[in-house]
Image (cartoon, rainbow over all chains, first blue to last red; front, side, top):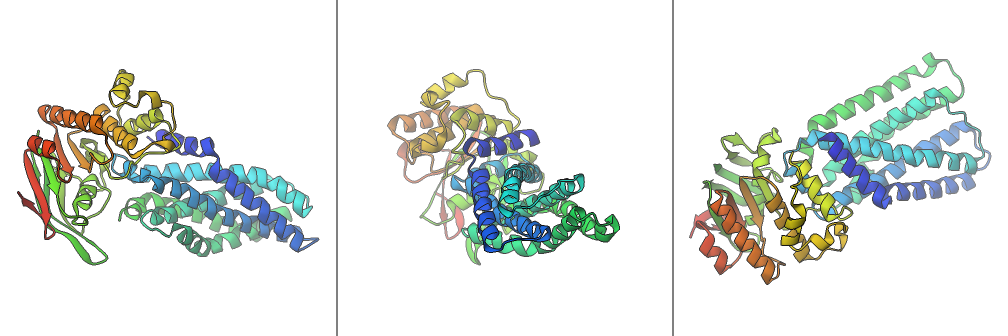
Length: 216
Length: 210
């Protein structure tokens, strides 16, 4: 069942590429605007900008994803079928996780180019990026589920996503800065644990609560 | 088979349904009518598991349809007012996905069925350009290809042409003959009235037999 739902999510996205392209376009525009507004930025600030951009474009991607479900009431077809809502949630988390990762793959060189900085992508940065993407995807889909019964999802997603993401945004900025500056792991390990624990907790919360979230 | 007991539903503290009860036996076709906004579609949405009631019970074959265990929904099929279709998938992909999430497989004679509902020429076409009538034909296709015990239809005749209406009525008679049950929300349709086992109206937030 999970593979059927995941395949549907990915097929819908990669047929139109609407979500990925709109996220990438917004990310590029924001990177350009940030890069021309301040010159000679330190690496640490570029990290801050990178993650702020990722959180901003995620809210756009989630809005598009849930708008597709609402357009012709397609989501009601799934919840009126014998499908466990937890499986729907997992498929949506995995699908959005893949989409953010693809956007980051293209956006990263654009940011390096615009900000004129040199980054070495270590395993540590790669792992932290994946963990944060998982958190954004799980939290975003919980919030997206809430918007299914609302006509204001373009407002609700950013209004709820940003405050709930703020601690993780802080943690990923601190942890990434620690990795790229080769600090001792003990100096930033608390931030890494916060990211991992939050990603796990929010994912389990979504699996448990999605049934109640999506029903009016 | 399908038992509804004392169902209650409100929107923003405005009661829409109160103490709605209904028993549907095998092979019964029940028509529900009522004024706009009387709660007909809300009742179907609750039975289909799309909406959550404030009180009451809905069960099928003695299994609670309102519980977290979704497996009992395999007996129910829902024809909503909206098409519940993915516009960027083709007709075939949509029906394949619909059957897969119901743990069913696409029948071998799918082309014949598509031809019967006049959608064969749109088999590999994305559904984003469908008209209301085509969406209704797609809903009919769902009912034909899948296994179910109780069908819920919300205004199934709206948007259908005369051929489609005739085909749907023929199918309703066929399903009744096959001991499948249907709850149909529809306004005045004289031919449907003749097929129906019982006619109900939603009056004062409750179901009244007419």
